[in-house]
Image 1: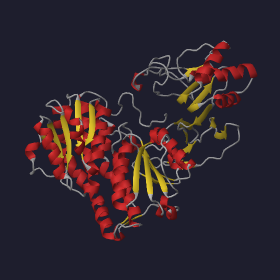
Image 2 (image 1 turned 90 degrees about the vertical axis):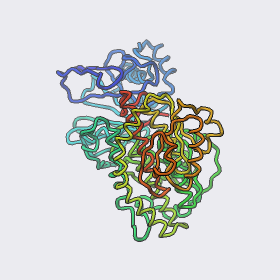
Image 3 (image 1 turned 120 degrees about the horizontal axis):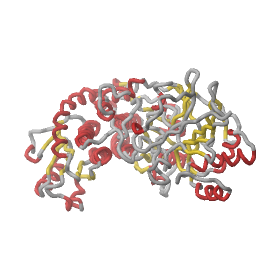
Length: 570
């Protein structure tokens, strides 16, 4: 008795997909997928199927040996409908079921053993209805455990409207879902007992509510994000920070002499700020590496070196691979992640959760700020074990608790930021400059503008301008200068003078509008804070500027082209 399976595909936004409203059924699979093999076309869209259209597959990841398998299957007479690597999976299962009379589960397991590369898979068959087979290797995959229902996803955010109970699959594990239950086993069919994690996010947290875009909503959630990051972690009268997740390794942590921070994109820039914080407050030597390059470096280390991974999703493929490489070398591994039970959270020796709630917009905003708050707390935690005094720690912690109020004051600048964005959004190129703690913010501000408005932008340390980038400056090149009044303020003013004399239009992010006001064509006023905490305030106007530029260009800032929220393939 073959059940009917309806297949719907399209390209572009999910809104383009038109479903038949008369469909009835109790199970199904679907996927939004980057184009990794073949052009963007309907035949290359998921799901993919076998010759007889009995077996259907969706896949996140890359099958590295697909070409040789496809050639072998074609020699056996299989006809392919797409250019993708995924389609071979459906045909392999078909081949094993037809020739060897295997069940769907047996054929799927035999197929998994032939695959090289990364995959998160969901498979259904007309011959065995009401069953979904799932499998994982180096791409995230989790099960949602509901009441009389089960779900599969690659991110917990997708499931919080339906269930809070999550089971994460491990590498080379597969699961069988039926209407009655689920079970998980190794690729050799050895049963695996799984831990259920509870995600404490609320449905309202993942709703846009009154906002047109998630990005704006999430920027405006920053004060609450900071409060969530510090809640229960500060003992102000003693100037100490408590991290329950690190206490089990307290002896090893006290012996740390070097830290290597690994991250990608925005998390990498958070790591660059973390380097300044950790070195200044804890006297620990710090290197920051892009996760994608970490495995290919031959670096000098000893047993007093720790590797700290930063990842919002906890599923970033390159960062996860970096942590595994560090563990192979016998190094202590730590993590800063937002998602409970995620792959990096489970892989590291100890970690710290952001508690920032779901972040839906692809461009990270509130989570970046949460990462900066956690890095500040971690620097104080480690510093108090070393040379940081109680009074020094109290000063920073007290100001940290005041930041939500200061950010709410900063939000009074939103109308001004919107006006500035309207004035400049048609310029094709931008330069961002900053010094010390605000140099990585220049990089992050440029990244945000690139991500959501597709405007070319570059970030530089202010002192580097005369070593090459100054050649780019003329009246057509706006410069955003991050220049709060601090210990490098006079140096920044000199850099701005250099730019102004060459015709650049200068937008200042400043704390003092009385001094040097004539240098700025436009400025955004932010509250004054301690230098170590400045990046938390200076980045917010840059996030808002990028957001409004995208809106004026009639782009969707939540879904930048070619980008995904979690990069789960290398």
